Image 1 (cartoon, helix red, strand yellow):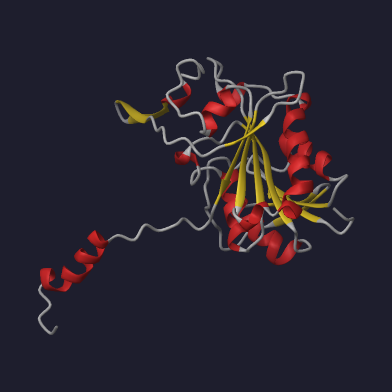
Image 2 (cartoon, rainbow, N blue to C red):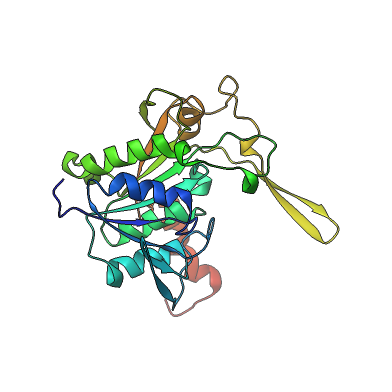
Length: 268
């Protein structure tokens, strides 16, 4: 890429997180990087939008007092040079499976970019689950080595390779570094969903039980899914589209045609 290559970098963990700094350092040698990211942690906020947000100058770019989607809209429409590519991340924690696509702020930033017709990469770091509360897990700068390597590799090559002729954005999930670079596996989001809830008096606790079994030998996901790839030590790259596709079927046509008769409209 030339010196004129522009990247808008955002995240949902907040502009002061170690993950966004890691990607800023990795991408700066190959592009002009403008950071527009939330002023604080806005994880799992999906594509929530605000009508008005405050913005502060920051050593990396701009800190927006809003969501990742706010940051993409503000960055593309006003704050930065219009980019060739949007990068979101690196998120602390994986974004795997169909059920997280609408929930993740990291993924939602990439989706928002797609509606501007700007290709995007969302990068997340898989941290193996144990009994430590996730908020207490420490991630060091070195833990992002694989994420830095693959994100800069893809950012430098995907546009010229024509990847975005067939995809709106890439959902990239990266394992912790383990000596040699991990291979890339092209995947699709896992369909497995195991949310449930438990009531205790006036409180309900939501459980995401999909993380409780991450043993590759017993993992009930097909070989080409993102979740299986990541627990087997591969980098998962899922090429995805936005907006969501529709599935037109004659059964719905029949219901539409009979609606007015069913609800009693008599002038037709």
